[in-house]
Amino acid sequence: MIIGKGLIALQFLDCDNDKIIFFASGVSNSSETDKNQFLREENLIRETLKAHPHKLFIYFSTCSIYDSSKYNSAYVLHKLQMEEIIKEFATHYLILRISNAVGKGGNPNLLLNYLARSIKDNKVLTIHKNATRNLIDVEDIKNIVLKYIESDIHNKIINVAYTDNFKIPDIITAFQDILNIKANISIEDLGEHYSIDVHELNYKFPITDKKKYLYNLIKKYYL
Image 1 (cartoon, rainbow, N blue to C red):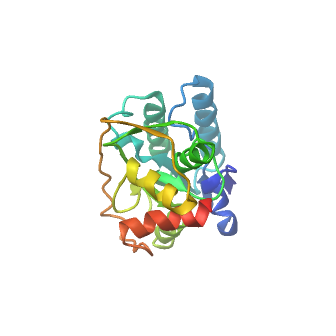
Image 2 (image 1 turned 90 degrees about the vertical axis):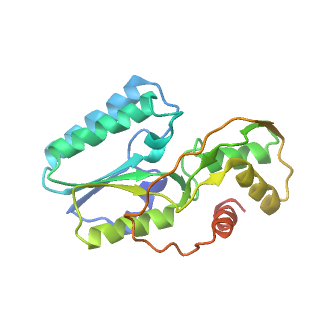
Image 3 (image 1 turned 180 degrees about the vertical axis):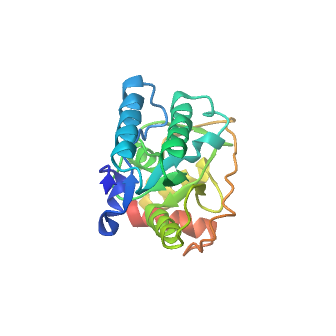
């Protein structure tokens, strides 16, 4: 059973079966503050767990909990609360904390979607020079999730992210190089770096060179 129609949910259409719930219908905008949106997700989670208490419940949470600038945000606090509900009421679960997913389409507020649109529209981008973000291909997300399912590993919280973060200015440079467009940017000496522990993943990314991985993402999804 797949709950959701967004970027991540679509990756699992060919994996759909009656023993697993892929719950990918949650709040995806990290700037969200609307309590009704949070309540909608909570109610749907509770209803789904009640109706299917013995199925493997796979929930896509967020790595934003490691970002000090977002830790106390309504979005992060909500996601942590959803994790606790799942841990309490699901017999079998996998909670996957995802970094910044990159793929074709999806929410326009996703980081690379926003940057690509702004650069193409020649909008001014205010860039924090020291800020970093972790980007991961949705195909890698899918492969990681399937690996855990096949391994029959349950009742864990797993960080699903690339092996390193990317500086925002480096992401802008990659877009400029590949799209052959000069970005309209304003740089501020601000921003923070935060690390995501992925030592448990035991996953071999198809591209291990950091710069090549970044450039491949942009060529793959934004050309």
